Length: 315
Ligand code: FO1
Image: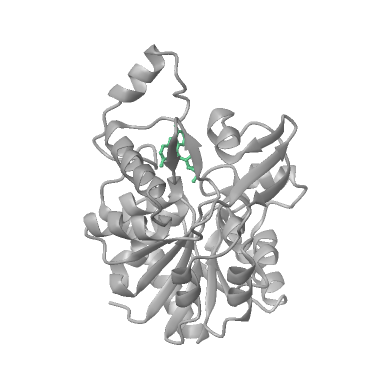
Protein backbone atom coordinates (compact mmCIF):
# COMPACT_ATOMS: atom_id res chain seq x y z
CA UNK A 1 0.00 0.00 0.00
CA UNK A 2 1.42 3.38 -1.10
CA UNK A 3 1.77 5.95 1.66
CA UNK A 4 1.69 9.76 1.59
CA UNK A 5 -1.13 12.21 0.96
CA UNK A 6 -2.43 12.36 -2.60
CA UNK A 7 -4.79 14.95 -4.05
CA UNK A 8 -6.77 13.90 -7.12
CA UNK A 9 -8.66 16.45 -9.22
CA UNK A 10 -11.67 14.66 -10.65
CA UNK A 11 -14.81 15.02 -12.69
CA UNK A 12 -17.37 12.21 -12.90
CA UNK A 13 -17.10 8.85 -14.63
CA UNK A 14 -13.53 9.03 -16.11
CA UNK A 15 -12.12 10.54 -12.93
CA UNK A 16 -13.89 8.03 -10.70
CA UNK A 17 -12.29 5.12 -12.59
CA UNK A 18 -8.77 6.25 -11.70
CA UNK A 19 -10.13 7.32 -8.30
CA UNK A 20 -11.16 3.74 -7.62
CA UNK A 21 -7.71 2.51 -8.66
CA UNK A 22 -6.03 5.01 -6.33
CA UNK A 23 -8.46 3.95 -3.60
CA UNK A 24 -7.28 0.36 -4.00
CA UNK A 25 -3.57 1.11 -3.71
CA UNK A 26 -3.32 4.19 -1.44
CA UNK A 27 -4.18 4.42 2.22
CA UNK A 28 -7.75 5.82 1.84
CA UNK A 29 -7.35 8.23 4.76
CA UNK A 30 -4.48 9.82 2.79
CA UNK A 31 -6.54 10.27 -0.39
CA UNK A 32 -8.24 13.62 -1.07
CA UNK A 33 -10.44 14.23 -4.09
CA UNK A 34 -11.14 17.78 -5.24
CA UNK A 35 -14.26 17.31 -7.29
CA UNK A 36 -15.84 19.36 -10.06
CA UNK A 37 -19.13 21.03 -9.12
CA UNK A 38 -19.50 23.04 -12.34
CA UNK A 39 -22.13 20.46 -13.44
CA UNK A 40 -24.25 21.09 -10.32
CA UNK A 41 -27.71 22.47 -10.90
CA UNK A 42 -31.17 22.87 -9.45
CA UNK A 43 -33.63 20.39 -10.93
CA UNK A 44 -37.24 19.94 -9.78
CA UNK A 45 -36.22 22.13 -6.83
CA UNK A 46 -33.38 19.81 -5.75
CA UNK A 47 -29.65 20.49 -5.65
CA UNK A 48 -27.93 17.89 -7.83
CA UNK A 49 -24.12 17.41 -7.63
CA UNK A 50 -23.46 14.69 -10.26
CA UNK A 51 -19.66 14.43 -10.12
CA UNK A 52 -19.52 14.44 -6.31
CA UNK A 53 -22.15 11.70 -6.24
CA UNK A 54 -20.50 9.62 -8.98
CA UNK A 55 -17.27 9.63 -6.99
CA UNK A 56 -18.93 8.80 -3.65
CA UNK A 57 -21.04 6.01 -5.17
CA UNK A 58 -18.03 4.58 -7.06
CA UNK A 59 -15.68 4.55 -4.06
CA UNK A 60 -18.47 3.04 -1.95
CA UNK A 61 -19.05 0.32 -4.58
CA UNK A 62 -22.75 1.19 -5.06
CA UNK A 63 -22.39 2.86 -8.47
CA UNK A 64 -24.28 1.93 -11.60
CA UNK A 65 -21.62 0.44 -13.85
CA UNK A 66 -23.88 0.47 -16.93
CA UNK A 67 -24.74 4.18 -17.00
CA UNK A 68 -21.55 5.34 -15.22
CA UNK A 69 -23.71 7.61 -13.03
CA UNK A 70 -26.35 6.99 -10.37
CA UNK A 71 -26.70 3.87 -8.23
CA UNK A 72 -26.64 0.14 -8.87
CA UNK A 73 -29.87 -1.86 -8.34
CA UNK A 74 -31.86 1.28 -8.97
CA UNK A 75 -35.62 1.57 -9.57
CA UNK A 76 -37.26 4.34 -11.62
CA UNK A 77 -40.78 4.65 -10.16
CA UNK A 78 -40.53 8.37 -9.38
CA UNK A 79 -38.93 9.09 -12.75
CA UNK A 80 -41.77 7.26 -14.54
CA UNK A 81 -44.52 8.98 -12.55
CA UNK A 82 -42.91 12.37 -13.25
CA UNK A 83 -43.29 11.47 -16.93
CA UNK A 84 -46.99 10.57 -16.43
CA UNK A 85 -47.52 13.92 -14.71
CA UNK A 86 -45.96 15.77 -17.63
CA UNK A 87 -43.18 17.03 -15.32
CA UNK A 88 -39.54 17.37 -16.33
CA UNK A 89 -37.83 13.99 -16.39
CA UNK A 90 -35.14 14.49 -19.03
CA UNK A 91 -32.54 14.17 -16.25
CA UNK A 92 -33.06 10.67 -14.91
CA UNK A 93 -33.12 10.42 -11.13
CA UNK A 94 -33.47 6.90 -9.75
CA UNK A 95 -35.45 6.34 -6.55
CA UNK A 96 -32.42 5.60 -4.34
CA UNK A 97 -30.43 8.45 -5.85
CA UNK A 98 -33.38 10.80 -5.30
CA UNK A 99 -33.26 10.13 -1.55
CA UNK A 100 -29.76 11.60 -1.47
CA UNK A 101 -30.92 14.70 -3.38
CA UNK A 102 -33.86 15.19 -0.97
CA UNK A 103 -31.55 14.86 2.02
CA UNK A 104 -28.79 17.14 0.70
CA UNK A 105 -31.21 19.81 -0.56
CA UNK A 106 -32.85 20.07 2.86
CA UNK A 107 -29.46 20.32 4.58
CA UNK A 108 -28.40 23.09 2.15
CA UNK A 109 -31.68 24.96 2.82
CA UNK A 110 -30.87 24.70 6.54
CA UNK A 111 -27.59 26.52 5.87
CA UNK A 112 -25.17 23.57 5.92
CA UNK A 113 -22.17 23.71 3.58
CA UNK A 114 -21.89 21.37 0.59
CA UNK A 115 -18.50 20.20 1.95
CA UNK A 116 -19.83 19.15 5.37
CA UNK A 117 -22.92 17.48 3.89
CA UNK A 118 -20.70 15.57 1.44
CA UNK A 119 -18.44 14.51 4.31
CA UNK A 120 -21.44 13.25 6.27
CA UNK A 121 -22.79 11.34 3.25
CA UNK A 122 -19.32 9.83 2.61
CA UNK A 123 -19.11 8.75 6.26
CA UNK A 124 -22.48 7.05 6.00
CA UNK A 125 -21.12 5.08 3.03
CA UNK A 126 -18.12 4.20 5.29
CA UNK A 127 -15.62 5.99 3.04
CA UNK A 128 -12.24 6.76 4.56
CA UNK A 129 -11.11 8.82 1.57
CA UNK A 130 -12.07 12.51 1.59
CA UNK A 131 -14.33 13.81 -1.18
CA UNK A 132 -14.16 17.60 -1.34
CA UNK A 133 -16.42 19.62 -3.64
CA UNK A 134 -14.19 22.28 -5.25
CA UNK A 135 -16.24 25.03 -3.59
CA UNK A 136 -19.16 25.57 -1.26
CA UNK A 137 -20.46 28.23 -3.65
CA UNK A 138 -22.21 27.75 -6.97
CA UNK A 139 -19.71 27.91 -9.84
CA UNK A 140 -21.60 26.94 -12.97
CA UNK A 141 -20.20 25.81 -16.29
CA UNK A 142 -21.86 27.72 -19.12
CA UNK A 143 -21.48 26.47 -22.68
CA UNK A 144 -21.74 28.89 -25.60
CA UNK A 145 -22.97 26.88 -28.58
CA UNK A 146 -24.52 27.20 -32.01
CA UNK A 147 -27.84 26.74 -30.13
CA UNK A 148 -27.08 29.65 -27.79
CA UNK A 149 -25.87 29.77 -24.17
CA UNK A 150 -26.63 26.53 -22.33
CA UNK A 151 -26.13 25.40 -18.76
CA UNK A 152 -23.93 22.29 -18.51
CA UNK A 153 -26.72 19.74 -18.05
CA UNK A 154 -28.89 21.35 -20.73
CA UNK A 155 -25.94 20.90 -23.10
CA UNK A 156 -24.71 17.53 -21.86
CA UNK A 157 -27.89 15.61 -21.08
CA UNK A 158 -30.96 17.46 -22.46
CA UNK A 159 -29.29 18.11 -25.83
CA UNK A 160 -27.06 14.99 -25.63
CA UNK A 161 -23.91 17.13 -26.21
CA UNK A 162 -24.94 17.63 -29.85
CA UNK A 163 -24.69 21.48 -30.06
CA UNK A 164 -21.36 22.75 -31.36
CA UNK A 165 -19.30 24.46 -28.66
CA UNK A 166 -17.88 27.93 -29.33
CA UNK A 167 -16.72 28.77 -25.81
CA UNK A 168 -16.89 27.48 -22.22
CA UNK A 169 -17.05 29.78 -19.20
CA UNK A 170 -17.63 29.49 -15.46
CA UNK A 171 -20.19 31.71 -13.78
CA UNK A 172 -20.01 32.48 -10.06
CA UNK A 173 -20.68 35.29 -7.61
CA UNK A 174 -18.13 33.83 -5.22
CA UNK A 175 -15.49 31.66 -6.93
CA UNK A 176 -13.68 30.65 -3.75
CA UNK A 177 -12.44 27.19 -2.71
CA UNK A 178 -13.66 25.77 0.58
CA UNK A 179 -11.38 26.03 3.62
CA UNK A 180 -10.80 22.26 3.39
CA UNK A 181 -9.63 22.48 -0.24
CA UNK A 182 -7.29 25.39 0.59
CA UNK A 183 -5.90 23.50 3.58
CA UNK A 184 -5.10 20.28 1.75
CA UNK A 185 -3.48 22.15 -1.17
CA UNK A 186 -1.19 23.88 1.37
CA UNK A 187 -0.34 20.68 3.26
CA UNK A 188 3.47 20.40 3.50
CA UNK A 189 3.25 16.58 3.74
CA UNK A 190 1.64 16.13 0.35
CA UNK A 191 3.10 13.33 -1.78
CA UNK A 192 1.64 14.55 -5.06
CA UNK A 193 -1.24 15.93 -7.10
CA UNK A 194 -3.01 13.89 -9.80
CA UNK A 195 -5.21 15.25 -12.57
CA UNK A 196 -7.56 12.37 -13.40
CA UNK A 197 -8.45 11.52 -17.03
CA UNK A 198 -11.65 13.56 -16.89
CA UNK A 199 -12.66 15.97 -19.65
CA UNK A 200 -10.08 18.82 -19.36
CA UNK A 201 -12.46 21.47 -20.72
CA UNK A 202 -15.71 20.50 -18.96
CA UNK A 203 -14.56 18.75 -15.77
CA UNK A 204 -11.04 19.90 -14.80
CA UNK A 205 -11.10 23.51 -16.07
CA UNK A 206 -14.01 24.41 -13.73
CA UNK A 207 -11.75 23.40 -10.80
CA UNK A 208 -8.80 25.33 -12.25
CA UNK A 209 -11.07 28.34 -12.90
CA UNK A 210 -10.89 29.02 -9.14
CA UNK A 211 -7.92 31.35 -8.89
CA UNK A 212 -6.71 30.15 -5.47
CA UNK A 213 -6.72 26.50 -6.60
CA UNK A 214 -5.03 27.36 -9.90
CA UNK A 215 -2.34 29.37 -8.11
CA UNK A 216 -1.69 26.69 -5.47
CA UNK A 217 -1.26 24.00 -8.11
CA UNK A 218 0.89 26.21 -10.36
CA UNK A 219 3.21 27.07 -7.47
CA UNK A 220 3.17 23.65 -5.78
CA UNK A 221 6.56 22.08 -5.04
CA UNK A 222 5.02 18.59 -4.94
CA UNK A 223 5.00 16.35 -8.03
CA UNK A 224 1.98 16.97 -10.26
CA UNK A 225 0.89 14.35 -12.77
CA UNK A 226 -1.98 14.21 -15.28
CA UNK A 227 -3.40 11.13 -16.98
CA UNK A 228 -4.42 11.73 -20.58
CA UNK A 229 -8.18 11.58 -21.28
CA UNK A 230 -7.50 10.70 -24.91
CA UNK A 231 -5.84 7.70 -26.50
CA UNK A 232 -4.62 7.66 -30.08
CA UNK A 233 -6.77 10.70 -30.96
CA UNK A 234 -9.96 9.25 -29.44
CA UNK A 235 -11.77 10.23 -26.22
CA UNK A 236 -11.54 7.58 -23.54
CA UNK A 237 -15.07 8.61 -22.50
CA UNK A 238 -17.56 11.25 -23.60
CA UNK A 239 -17.19 14.17 -25.98
CA UNK A 240 -13.59 15.32 -25.25
CA UNK A 241 -12.28 15.06 -28.83
CA UNK A 242 -15.57 16.37 -30.29
CA UNK A 243 -15.15 19.49 -28.16
CA UNK A 244 -11.46 19.80 -29.09
CA UNK A 245 -12.45 19.71 -32.77
CA UNK A 246 -15.11 22.36 -32.26
CA UNK A 247 -12.67 24.60 -30.41
CA UNK A 248 -10.21 24.27 -33.32
CA UNK A 249 -7.71 22.17 -31.33
CA UNK A 250 -5.77 19.18 -32.62
CA UNK A 251 -7.13 16.01 -31.05
CA UNK A 252 -3.94 14.52 -29.69
CA UNK A 253 -2.06 14.15 -26.40
CA UNK A 254 0.23 17.06 -27.28
CA UNK A 255 -2.77 19.42 -27.04
CA UNK A 256 -3.65 17.91 -23.65
CA UNK A 257 -0.05 18.38 -22.42
CA UNK A 258 -0.06 21.98 -23.68
CA UNK A 259 -3.40 22.61 -21.96
CA UNK A 260 -2.02 21.44 -18.60
CA UNK A 261 1.59 22.66 -18.99
CA UNK A 262 1.42 25.20 -16.11
CA UNK A 263 -0.06 22.61 -13.74
CA UNK A 264 1.95 19.44 -14.30
CA UNK A 265 5.46 18.03 -14.08
CA UNK A 266 4.52 14.80 -15.83
CA UNK A 267 1.84 13.18 -17.95
CA UNK A 268 0.86 9.53 -18.34
CA UNK A 269 -0.07 8.76 -21.95
CA UNK A 270 -1.00 5.58 -23.73
CA UNK A 271 1.71 3.47 -25.37
CA UNK A 272 -0.09 4.00 -28.70
CA UNK A 273 0.80 7.71 -28.41
CA UNK A 274 4.54 7.17 -27.97
CA UNK A 275 5.34 9.19 -31.11
CA UNK A 276 4.46 12.34 -29.10
CA UNK A 277 6.96 11.69 -26.28
CA UNK A 278 9.74 13.87 -27.74
CA UNK A 279 7.47 16.87 -28.39
CA UNK A 280 5.93 16.69 -24.90
CA UNK A 281 9.34 16.33 -23.23
CA UNK A 282 10.62 19.35 -25.15
CA UNK A 283 7.92 21.36 -23.30
CA UNK A 284 9.63 20.40 -20.02
CA UNK A 285 7.02 17.78 -19.12
CA UNK A 286 8.11 14.24 -18.21
CA UNK A 287 6.23 11.40 -19.89
CA UNK A 288 5.27 7.94 -18.68
CA UNK A 289 3.93 5.42 -21.17
CA UNK A 290 1.26 3.05 -19.93
CA UNK A 291 -1.84 1.26 -21.17
CA UNK A 292 -4.35 3.74 -19.83
CA UNK A 293 -7.67 2.30 -21.05
CA UNK A 294 -9.46 1.24 -17.83
CA UNK A 295 -12.03 -1.44 -18.65
CA UNK A 296 -11.96 -3.33 -15.36
CA UNK A 297 -10.79 -3.04 -11.75
CA UNK A 298 -7.38 -4.59 -12.54
CA UNK A 299 -6.78 -1.90 -15.20
CA UNK A 300 -7.77 0.84 -12.72
CA UNK A 301 -5.35 -0.51 -10.13
CA UNK A 302 -2.53 -0.88 -12.67
CA UNK A 303 -2.92 2.68 -14.01
CA UNK A 304 -3.09 4.03 -10.43
CA UNK A 305 0.14 2.13 -9.61
CA UNK A 306 1.83 3.67 -12.66
CA UNK A 307 0.71 7.13 -11.52
CA UNK A 308 2.08 6.63 -8.00
CA UNK A 309 5.39 5.22 -9.29
CA UNK A 310 5.65 8.21 -11.63
CA UNK A 311 5.10 10.59 -8.70
CA UNK A 312 7.82 8.74 -6.75
CA UNK A 313 10.13 9.03 -9.76
CA UNK A 314 9.52 12.79 -10.15
CA UNK A 315 9.97 13.66 -6.46
N1 FO1 B 1 -26.21 11.68 -17.50
C1 FO1 B 1 -26.96 11.44 -18.60
O1 FO1 B 1 -26.40 11.37 -19.70
N2 FO1 B 1 -28.34 11.30 -18.51
C2 FO1 B 1 -29.00 11.38 -17.33
O2 FO1 B 1 -30.23 11.26 -17.29
C3 FO1 B 1 -28.21 11.58 -16.14
C4 FO1 B 1 -28.79 11.60 -14.89
C5 FO1 B 1 -27.96 11.72 -13.76
C6 FO1 B 1 -28.52 11.66 -12.48
C7 FO1 B 1 -27.72 11.78 -11.36
C8 FO1 B 1 -26.34 11.96 -11.51
O3 FO1 B 1 -25.56 12.07 -10.42
C9 FO1 B 1 -25.76 12.01 -12.77
C10 FO1 B 1 -26.56 11.90 -13.91
N3 FO1 B 1 -26.02 11.94 -15.18
C11 FO1 B 1 -26.80 11.74 -16.29
C12 FO1 B 1 -24.58 12.21 -15.37
C13 FO1 B 1 -24.31 13.72 -15.35
O4 FO1 B 1 -24.85 14.39 -16.42
C14 FO1 B 1 -22.80 14.10 -15.25
O5 FO1 B 1 -22.74 15.45 -14.98
C15 FO1 B 1 -22.03 13.82 -16.51
O6 FO1 B 1 -21.83 12.46 -16.61
C16 FO1 B 1 -20.65 14.54 -16.53
O7 FO1 B 1 -19.82 14.13 -15.49
